[in-house]
Image (tube, rainbow, N blue to C red; front, side, top):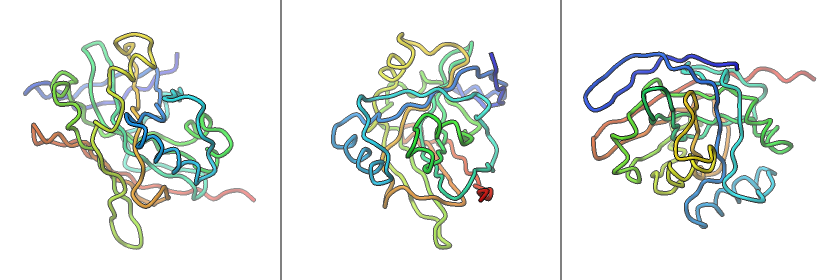
Length: 230
């Protein structure tokens, strides 16, 4: 099975370690809002782009492990793609880890085929992970934020807490059909609506903030749009 090896800085308790993790399976979860109002806002946002309402929620889509990257730059085809901040669960032989990434998606393709659109773009990850056990008891307090570059300014694009997203255990069970992810799996946990609507940007920054431990994981990347052939 194809796999991607990425080096992360893992933090468990007070122990910090730099170590490679082999990832063999990657899935992105969609329509994961915990309450109906949040789900309706997300559905309306996607329908405004011409993306049809889902028949069931949540949904899980597999993408290639080779799409994962910790780079600070990605290349996309054309100008119609955008990022979205998501908690990412990573399972290796030592346990379950929590990180943050961007489910960067080709919105033009998404109007035709959601699954294909998820495969079109690299999925940037911050190179840091926390032990799941270190945040499990205050999971809903975790804060997600993202920013875009727009009109020469950095603008807040998304902001919310993990309480707006289905619990990690629910998403794991929904995807894996059991109470833990298989070893070598990364699961993007879904997101919430953008402030001002979904739009493209040449730079996308994001973070996961833990207010109880007063620490954050942050990353940013540039988006290079390749020309579309006539």
